[in-house]
Image (cartoon, rainbow, N blue to C red; front, top):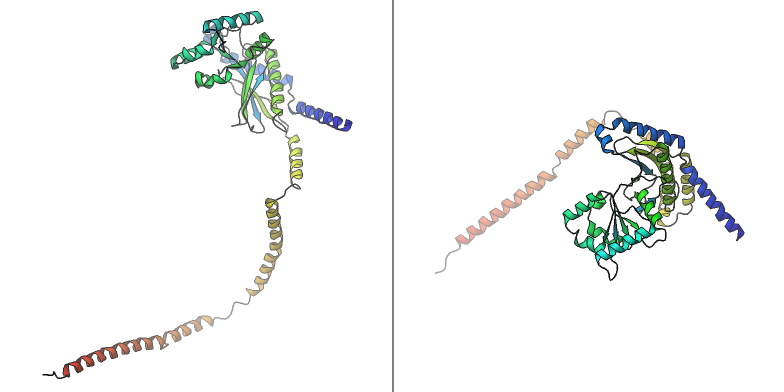
Amino acid sequence: MPIAHAWLRFTREADSMAEEREVALDRGQVKKAVQALQAFLRTKSTQDSLLLDETQHVSLLFTLWKIPKAAQTIRIPLPHGQRPDTDDVCLFTRDEPNMTSEQTQRFYKKLLEEKGVKNITEIIPYKVLRTEYKPYEAKRRLLGNFDMFLSDDRVRRLLPSHLGKHFYQRKKEPLAVNLQSKHLARDIQRVIQGTSLKVTNKGCCCMARVAHSGMTADEVTENIEAAVQTAVAKLRTKQKGPVMKLIHIKSQTSVALPIFTSDLSHLSVPQEAEKHAQTPKKKGAAAKKQAKKNKTADVKQPDTTGEREEEIPQLVPISTPSKKPKLEPAKAKQLEKAPKPAAVKKGKKAQSKLTKKAGKTDSKVKRKVPKVK
């Protein structure tokens, strides 16, 4: 047992070291990329955007080595909030038993005040969402009035059929929150100021928003490092081997700047080891067929060479003097002069003439017979 525990500890340490080696961001390089991106955004900013205080989102673009088998959403808490306090947040709650919709709103407002939550702008119970926001125009109005949506985890699975596809196309689908948590203020703050990474099984690229253009370079770099660490740790639980291939940083209008490129040297060793490990384990009909093909290929190679060696000397003495063209027309003339087909034709004609004469004689004989009175 002690040996087994030591081996497990060694494998875990090796995996953690491999994970650290796999994605090792250079902080100085990341900061240079962030500063270059901020300088580009300053040059592209106009007077209208400065007056309106519009900021652009800064996102991380992850390129994976393998396409995941199943889609998943990864929650990423960030050390520096990427949303201003002026953003409007809407919370969908469940319908409390023996309470009207107004009473449930009051109940949850009081609960949030007691827990110290101040970021929620409006509370909408599930019954109000089904009745008042059923028309299409009401749903579009609700989508435009708020910057972010949260929902009680007890009602989360019921919302997609009532919200519609526009919430998901605009990437404003409600994020689940446990309203029964003891640390409710901390959990809601992490969800609001954090980000989420949606990994799909339809491609190897995914994107997460980690900062905005109004933040300092140090704050953006710290958010990038935290996002990369959590994303790699979550993805490694469902995938074996290296996960991240490339990581880029970009804004809504800029070109993607690379901040991490995976080293290809560590990929050749495990792939070759997997091939060597898989070859002796091959059993069944497929392995037998391959063995037979290899044997037949090995047997056929000397036979084909032998045939070629035997055929080459036979082709040399075939060239003979020009007597064959003279003999061939003579044989053709002899075949043409053969009396067999002519005799057959004459015989047929003679037989036909004899049959005709016999018929005429029979008719004449019949005519010459005297009639009996």
